[in-house]
Amino acid sequence: MSAEELPAPNRVGIGERDPGSDSSHPGTPVDPADRGAREDRDRLIGAPFLPPQEVAATPVSGTASVVLDSRSQVSEHFRILATKVRMLVSFDRPACIGVVSASAREGKTTVSIGLAHALTRTVATRVALLDLDLRRPALAHSLGLGKAEGIGEWLDNRSEGIPLRRRSDVDFVVATAGELISGSYELLGGRPMLRALEAARQAFEFTLLDLPPLGPVADALAVQDHIDGFLLVVRSRHCPAEAIQAAVSRLRVGMLLGIVFNDQRDIIPAYYNYASRRYGKD
Image (cartoon, rainbow, N blue to C red; front, side, top):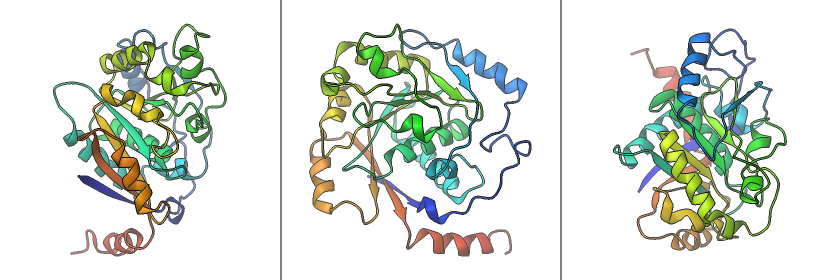
């Protein structure tokens, strides 16, 4: 089982951003050449997904601002995680991976965002992040995208397709959950959703699914036969070990790709303070 430790997001300082200084920082305008490459990639996207709509890179706060800042220590951990994830799945076909946790507030949405961003900067050019936590969606708020129709409306037959949006300062596309709906387990396991996941494989090298926690509800289990596996986000000192074990036991054997150990305050910051002083000085 592969595991990657991430430092506590609120322990990493973020300096003021200069929008014109580096294209890897949030808020930076996209280079015209990069925009042309995006348009070429977008032509591969088909139904039920709608063509991506670019939205302004509005300021984000909290953990999302950390994981999207390529200067932060956390971003380096996500680049390592992206490389490990690439090795965990088949190179023969596009990957579809669910990001889950045992309970709420473990950081799975933050990890989903950070991994999607890191994948586009390391091992892939076509990455989609889908918010399938239809009961308690957080992706739109975390990325500053605002309220809009999403996957929920499409599954409820109230829209013609699944809208895709992309912040102007990142390369991955996002399908938000949209309006809260009932019967999410049945909808996630239904034929339309499975058709959407197959269409995502055709259009993207990596599709990440931000799914509900395994402990409280069974929604994530509805898609496990149609994805490559799960990453389990475990927040340090947050969820009892027994609850984590119970959550993992709900997955089919072999479906757990690895564990992302999040918010480890005791080890990583001290190590990085030392490593950053030593690197390049010997």
